[in-house]
Length: 151
Image (tube, rainbow, N blue to C red; front, top):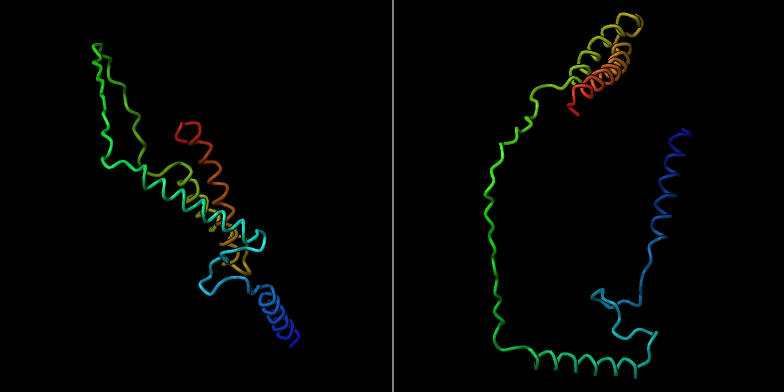
């Protein structure tokens, strides 16, 4: 009964904190955009900015060239007259890595050993043994892969 009460109280308090942390911004317009004239600048400064912006737009339309500029691309080709012997490509090894094999074998052996050792709860022993055996098997297989240069 106490557990249900504490869980319900924690959920209600969390919801109340979430709702109270949300702000309602009244200074935004209905569209969700920022107001056009913020309080930090005066109206005269804003009007000067609007005039400057209009002048910039007018000069951009006047200076836009009527014809697009042509771009010339020069390509230079060189010929390599010396030939070299082909370099042997390193082939990627296929199949299971030794780390994967070690994990599978270790998990199987560990699960069997855990089930045999823990007689009261064989499933728990198998699970614990499988995890431990898989970890040990991965470590051994990974070190073997490093020696072979797979990783």
